[in-house]
Image 1 (cartoon, rainbow, N blue to C red):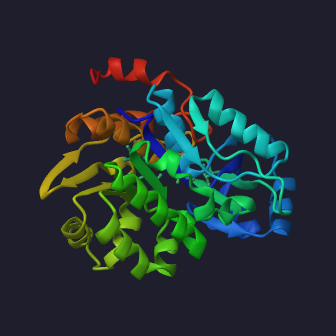
Image 2: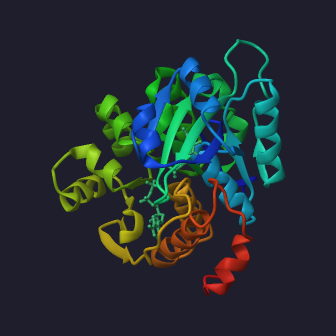
Length: 329
Ligand SMILES: Nc1ncnc2c1ncn2[C@@H]1O[C@H](COP(=O)(O)OP(=O)(O)O)[C@@H](O)[C@H]1O
Ligand SMILES: O=C(O)C[C@@H](O)[C@H](O)C(=O)COP(=O)(O)O
C-alpha cells in the first residue's frame, strides 16, 4: 500500500470570482468561456473592476485533488506558491481540505502567487483571466521522487505544458511514478495549449500516459479530424483509457476498446467553474478504488453537478454522503 492514492501536479492558483453581465465581458475584451493568460497590469485592472469578490483556492488539477481529498483518499499536490499572503492562504486551504501540499511556499524570486480573475455570466459560464506568477515556474527540481514513487496514480495538468521546465517536471513525475508501479494520466486543460504544443502532447499521451481526460474541444484539438467520434477513436488507439466530457450532454469513456456512455442530467449551472476538475475528482476516486467504468463515470458526474450548483471550483458538500445518496457507495 502506497502513502498516496492520488498525487497531482499543476498550477497553484488563487481564484477571485465575481458575477457579471455578458456586456461587461465585451466591454473589457474578455473572451467568454475560456482561460486566457494575462499580465500583471491587466490583472490589477480586472481585479479593480470586480464587485463582490470571492477568493477561493483554485488551479485545475489542484481542484481535482481537493475533491478527492474531500472524498477521504490520501492525496498530495505538487505546485509552487510564493511566500506571500495568497501563497499561505492557498497552502493552508489545501492541507485543511485533506491534501498534503508538499512544496513549502518559496521566498526566492519576485514572482507572486498566481491568481485568476474569474467572471461568471448569468448563464453560469465562467471566463478565466489568469496571471501566472510563480506557479508556472514549476520544474523537475520541484518534483520529489519520494512523493511520486509513493503515488498509485499521478495526475498531470496540461496547462503546465506551456514551458519546457513544466514538460520536464511532468516527465520526471510520470516516469518515476510508473517505474514504481503507479499509473499516470493527464487533464488536457485547454485546446489553445494543445495548439501550441500538439506534437509534444500527442507523444506524451501515446508514450507516457495510462489515461487522458478532456472536454470535447480538448479531445478534438488533438487530432483535428473534424469529427469527435474519429478524434476519440484516434486517441483511444494510442492510450488505454480516454475520457471525454461534453458539458450537459453526457460523458464517453473508452477503455481498451470498450466504450461506455454515461448520461448527464443537464442543468443551468450557478457557476461552471471547476466542472471538469470535479468530474475528474469523482472519476479518479472510482478508478483508485477499483470501481467499474460506468460507476466511476457516474461518480464524476455527481461531483461535477455539486460544484456547478454554487460559486467556486471546489466541493462544499460532503461528497461521500452524496455518493451514498446516489447508491454509488
Ligand atoms: N450544464 C450542465 N448540466 C449538467 N452537468 C454539467 C453541465 N455542464 C457540465 N456538467 C458536468 O461537468 C462535467 C464537465 O463539464 P465540461 O463542460 O465538459 O468540462 P470543462 O469544465 O472541463 O469544460 C460534465 O461531464 C458534466 O458531468
Ligand atoms: O488554473 C487556472 O487558470 C484557473 C483555475 O484556478 C480554475 O479554478 C479552473 O481551472 C477551473 O476549472 P474548470 O472550470 O474545470 O476548467
